[in-house]
Image (tube, rainbow, N blue to C red; front, top):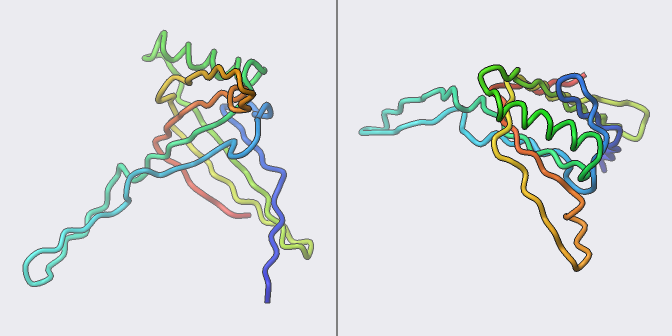
Length: 151
């Protein structure tokens, strides 16, 4: 039997601000770059299992439209962090995605992230051939921890 999935109505919130000036394609990506656990196997198959706290780190890329209000707000936050890092208030972020089954039931998946900072400044693209990417500003953030929940 086939399974149908309907998606839409995503919500992106950073520090209480809903981000709406997004472009096209992947507007937010969440990546956990480090393993939660590693293992070392030695003589006779003896194995040591190690929980890695660095596995909690979450990297986020968010793509907004250049020059729009959300780009200006994110840029101002970036400049504040760069100019006075010690007083920077760590970000929170929520990404909620509603998923329907085609039969009227909807589940919300929600990522809740805490302890966020910008990791690299956004780069800029100028293109005379009509490349749509030049209208997108990508911000890179990292968060200390996060959870994924379903409701």
